[in-house]
Length: 230
Image (cartoon, rainbow, N blue to C red; front, side, top):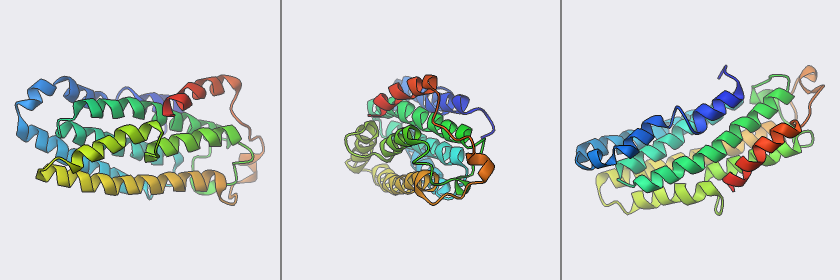
């Protein structure tokens, strides 16, 4: 988490970490001839979704929470691929790119405004100082949770529905781990928003002396991502 936030946003949202999933997607004709390989993909995908979500529950670094949520969402995409639902996996990959980039760049706005403070327990009460950043962070978090009528809902819910009606052991396994991961995702997303923006402030004076919402050029970058998350 030492890298600059725009770099994190690019890597986690649309380029490096999704490359393996995109490769499986492009190689889908080969995977269809190897059903045992698909079972392995589904098993490790569901396990990753749940494991990363439980790890995200206990992180206190703002960017680490979002990073573990990336790992969890990649698990969703992987088990969708393992269930041969390639189109839905790609749909979630595209939706995830928008709201995850939005979350990372909003986190960067918070860290910059707080004089490079990343610890959520040393934040709080930022709603009045950073209203635009709060709106973007809330929108990204709601999309990540799969709130109805936001982009994340349509792909995430479809993945879980396909797992529920996949009448094999892999379907039951992926469905229940996916549901538990979704619960954990909702919990740590609400925790992130609460500790950062709504809780009583616990910040050092030097962190909030020059606090401000992002510059207009950053707002211009965040707005299209917000529209994509919607």
